[in-house]
Amino acid sequence: MQVLQSLNQLPTDAAFDLVVIGAGGAGMAAALFAALDGKTVLLVERTGHVGGTTAWSAGTTWVPGTHHATKVNPSDTLAEAARYLTNAIGDRTPAALRQAFLDHGAAAIRLLEDRTELKFRPYPKHPDYISDLGGSTLNGRALEPLPFDGRLLGDLFQLVRPPIPEFTVLGGMMVDRTDINHLLALTKSFASFKHAFKIIARHGLDRLSHPRGTRLVMGNALVARLLYSLSKQACVTLVLNTSVERFERDGADVTGVVLKGQGAGAGGNRRVSARGGVVLASGGFNRHPDLRAQMLPGADIAWCPAAPGHTAEAHALAQDAGAVYGQGALSNAFWAPVSLRKRADGSTAVFPHFVMDRAKPGMLTVNRKGERFVNESTSYHLFGMAMQATGSVPAWLVCDATALQKYGTGMVRPGASPKDMAPFLADGYLTQGATLDELAQKLGIDPAGLKASIEEINRCADTGVDPRFHRGETAYQQNIGDASAGTKNPNLGPLKTAPYFAVQLHPGDIGAATGFATDGDARVLDAQGQPIAGLYAVGNDMHSIMGGVYTAPGITIGPGLVFGCLAARHAGARSAVAVP
Image (cartoon, rainbow, N blue to C red; front, side, top):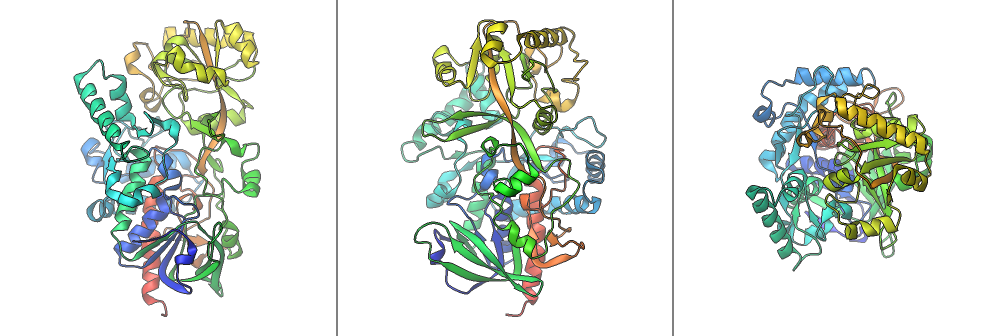
């Protein structure tokens, strides 16, 4: 792979079989699949890093029916996966599009593992999110990337988008769920001590020669594995700090692009021919001001925890070529509750509350009235939607001293000492009250409502049943609770130990659900439902096959990889018959 730091290094009037716009997970996958077929690829990235939001994610990849599934769930079938998607999504997206994903997913994963450095594992228990629906499973469909040694990348390591600092420990050491469990138990288990010592010692050595840890996990591992695989493909050119100014067209067909460099010394524009087509993989519309105002009214851009590159600059170009957005989604975006904190450098940390705190015993969430409004153990997507639907913006995640010590809350880590908590209390990220009245007064919420909500959750903890919100009743919810807590319900525990604490939450859009309508080959469709020759969309530029329903972990990355394969295959076939 040839890496160009700026557009002026690209020859004028260059020609490739495929041009991919965006080097996030889906775009990198499309480029890699095309390269495996021997096609020449130009991968265009607007920023100076690859990986997009995939690099900041858990890297979970939801693809049913793979060879990994038989290791943990041999009885699962594609028919059951299709039944689950039908039950969850209904007619929000075409069933044929979902079936194309299911039909080709296993082969795409097998091809990646056989011919590239992409390696996955199934997690022993990783339930579908709506686990009470028919066709759902507890495991087998969600795959995780294996950790990766970033040192193998050499100078390319610096191209991988660094993780969110607040998701690392010890000055840049990445940790996944397995690592966290071992770190919390390192004084209780020799196996945990051994695991923790190994990764901490490795990190100490890394910091002697690298600005951050090189043991990469989760989304960083997935992106690094894609980059390492691409680096072995001589037919791929990656150009950074470059965006698209316009599409080249022959009648209605998209035949290439005109690129523009970002920043000083970018070298002007370059015209590039794409014999097979152009693949849009720019990450979705979320950071485009006008589209955001239209599709996500009331959601402040400051609450978005996604990577900076998804500005939708190419969306208007696609619309000029006849592309239309998909319709019928439950929501135009996928959501998670987030908390905000100013960093020392003046930037804002946006921390998604996925699974580590809000669903645990001793936690509850209230609005300005001090009232509960949501099942705190539901999926982060439904949680974020509930915040907006009930007008509970902002909301507050409340816990007692016992829960804070055991689970942490947001950016405050488990086991935090008074000294550890002091900076969070000083800047207002964390609020503390010696009593519930004091906490309510500091938060500016109704004290009577808060006390009533605490009394309610304490009664629920005593019985193990939450009659109003049904917290902890499904396998998914129980999986993100704490079965070791000794409570009747792994998601319910009392708040009785002063002082009490709270963190403010907002609904943060973690990715676009609405994108361009496509067919089963990821070809972009026009208003009449006809493919636009030479134009493809994958990742969050493609209208989600989930129709705005968050069905399972990894439902953006999994389809991104699979439709990246289908787009590359179709465009590659076009390039083979294109006129030179």
